[in-house]
Amino acid sequence: MTSAPSLRLTLAAALALALAACANPSGIAPRAQLRDASTVGVPAPTAATAPAVEAAWWRAYGDPALDRLVDQALAGSPSLGLAQARLARALAVAEVADAALLPQVGLGADITRQRYTENGAVPAPLAGSVRNNGLLQLSSSWELDFFGKNRAALDAALGGARAAAADAQAARALLAQQVVRGWLQLARAQDQLAVAERTLAQRGEQLALVKDRLDAGLDTRLELRQAEGGLPEARQQIEALREQIQLARHALAALAALPPAALQDAAPSLARLQVPSLPTALPADLLGRRADVQAARWRVEAATRDVDSARAQFYPNISLTGFAGLSSIGLSNLLEAGSLQWGIGPALRLPLFDAGRLRANLRGKAADVDAAVESYNGAIVGAVREVADQLVSARSVAVQQQEQRAAQEAAEGAYAIAKQRYGAGLGNYLQVLTAESNVLAQRRQQVELAARALDVQAQLAHALGGGVTVDAAPATPLAQNTR
Image (cartoon, rainbow, N blue to C red; front, top):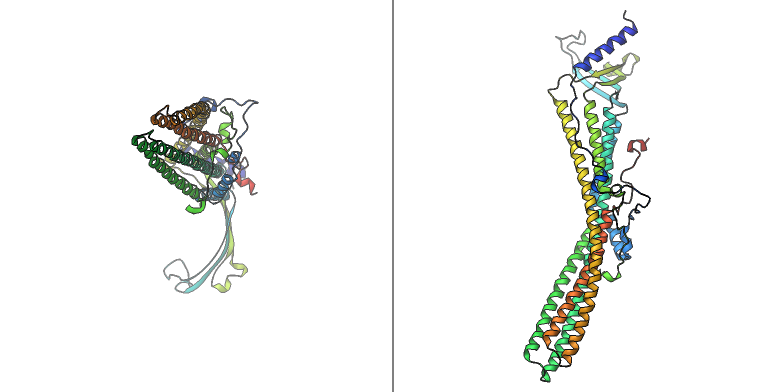
């Protein structure tokens, strides 16, 4: 009889030989490298690191109507519903991977009616007879994850779930930004409409003045025709702005999943909006604030764990299986003690030759890691550039506004003098038209710069990671949260 130590030695030798003969994963690994934050211009963290942007950053504009509209969009947008569905699917995949680490138990019940062959191994009186066979059995199996294949698959699924959670947060942040920017565009069009309406009224007053001077013999019909030509132009601009306002309302209603006419009375004004106070320099912890960067990083983690799982498939698959139940020929005997059967035992499966299938699978997983790493690198480069661009624009718009205010004061003064001179008969109407054109251009420019200053702050808030309401990358694995 073979002793226990000899048996263990024989099994170990057999396993070693099998491992030596199995498919080999050597020489296959990802090549791409994650970029360090400092290489893309993000400064090292300091005690003076800028505070994070508030999750509901749009409330800093001080417009309750805007706050309600953003809340409505976040509550009912189909795009967010799609992101939540993708997250739910990723969580389900993680639960499936988690289940592979635990024993599986099943219950089976079979009843068959069978005729036994007369020319086989079954002896009489069963041979040639028709009988009912019954089976009631409890079976179980447990794959022993010695080489970490199932654990790596679970980690990959958890990484995918975290990436999906971050994607959902990124979708929320993007939707909030789109609503805010749409609201600002509506306010810009409303203010431009007010300028156009003031222009129409102003030109009506000028036309009345020219008519009076014509009746007094101080002007010719040339000045009258010039004054009359300004009215259709002003009315055309008003109609074009009204079209823009309606389209902007429809776009906002669609973002909030509302009917097109739901915002028919919405009429925001730039003058009633406050400029949010945001950082004026690139924050050191920028990359940790943005949900899209977090999602890219978790995809790298998931792809890396997929490589570990694919590598573990080269090693033996060891499992324990067992069953216990009742089996009989003839249903009347099924529940008798003599019908009891059971069995238990280990099983080992090892790939020896698969025509390169496992190596090809591993190469594919390694390529997925490279792609995820480069996607992450691209995300951080894009994030840093986006913030840098908005910081430059914010500073530039502030300077432009200062210069525009000075230009508008000069234009308004020149226009007032031109009207006075024309009314006193010291100047011609062409001078009034020229001065008026400068004033109107400056008024329109003032509205455009005010709108752009607010819009830049909205883009900067989004670029800095504003709009994320929960941690998109929880530190505790989802599987552990359920235990």
